[in-house]
Length: 250
Image (cartoon, rainbow, N blue to C red; front, side, top):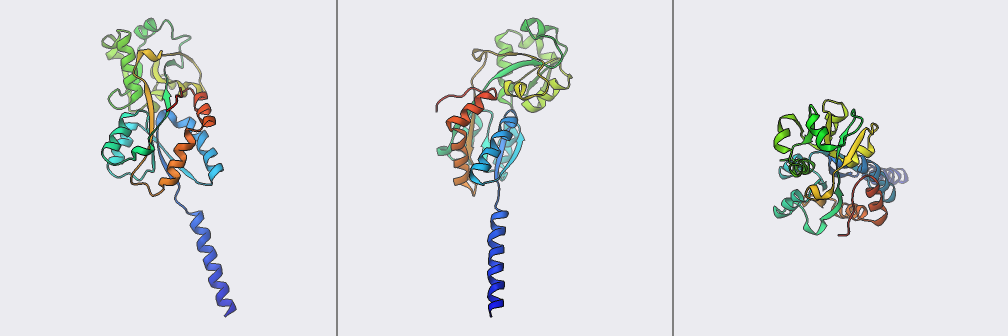
């Protein structure tokens, strides 16, 4: 009888242990521009809470479409505010969870040129200019607004090479397939090739408000909300600022 009881207790302990070991990770859909920061921030959250995080990177537009079709994410870290707003309208994200975790900064960057200034001359002489798709990517929209502000959009349209997202746009410029590219300042600061860049003034384009939400389909809403609270913590906001973003009060 004792042996049977021991087996039951051992089995029960094994089940309890495996329940912890195989607990579902918190699944984050993260906009490409925030790849480097989240890779540094996620381990801090994991260490503090014991909750594992699973990261997926891509364009905000693609994640938006996937979420509408039932993609199993818990949290969406978008590169803009419009897509989380639309998910809330559709009942696919929780309005009470929404935060602006960062404000993006745009940079004109080259991995090969000795300088990118004067900007007008550099753009006009460039063979290829990389930008993210303005219809899908917030940083692409900001790049188009910047070129329009500089009265160069119509003159340069034939030179533009469009990336699906800001990650691909960075790769076009990094690989020197494009002479210059409009990328996220955070990518330039995190990259192993510094090159030369010009930080685009905020007044040249609409604010890039990067919003995050907990998805309505999440089975881990408590942990998901805790993660968003973690992102807004003063010390974490300071880290986000150090990665090349602007932080503002809610």
